[in-house]
Image 1 (cartoon, rainbow, N blue to C red):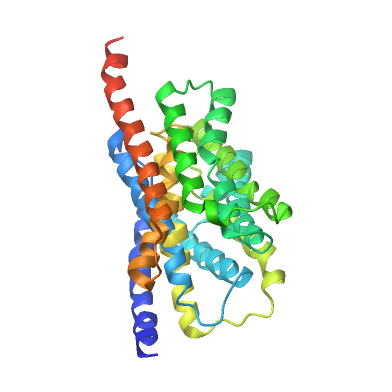
Image 2 (cartoon, helix red, strand yellow; image 1 turned 135 degrees about the vertical axis):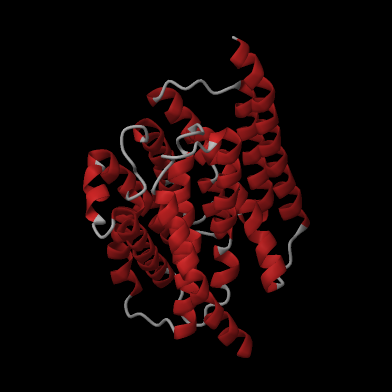
Length: 323
């Protein structure tokens, strides 16, 4: 129990740093361009942040399921609000209202992603949920091609296919035909992700969509509170969930909005698959969970697909510049 108290005490100390980082991110790129390579590194950092959810939720004492989603969304809402207050010098509603319809669409998509994953887990297996969610790069590529008229290189299609095979290999032992309703709900995650990425790419030059994360968090709280009631989280749980809401949701989600200016939707979705690969690694390192051979083999396949795609893009970029 002493270990749990140590974690509880340390978690709040990280909160101000996360809030300040999110606030700095919300200011955008007014003074310095991020660039393609910087955007990739920043997105990899986002994937690392997203991937810590599994190992930290294993430390929870009483909160579970929808209550975890509610508290994470609530602390995400608080973190983004503080960031906007800092950015706007006391008027966080100004950037929210300035987003218009695009911001509302993006906010709804964030809410769908925040909530559908937990809804799916309640109705089907984790393996089924992860497998369905992993088609996000494919949907992002198709939607980007239709809406943004962005050509997807042949090498990227190969990378997407290889990554999907890698994810399937990681979870294949747990995949089943049961829980069809949960799989249909899980389908909302990659669909919402693809729509959100295309909206971010299409509108980022006209309006800052970082505050849409706030809308998503508010909607997620409203949707999950009735399902989570009565709330049972302990003080230790709240410290961990605060860390997750700020570091695992608010910070990386606001950073991803910034990244969308520099990367194509399919490239973002592909790199985000790192979350699925890193999650079992942290569970092994932090919680002592066994990591099977299939998990390691599939994870290496996903990593090879991501590295190969970036190498292919890097080699093609000089030729495109010459043309």
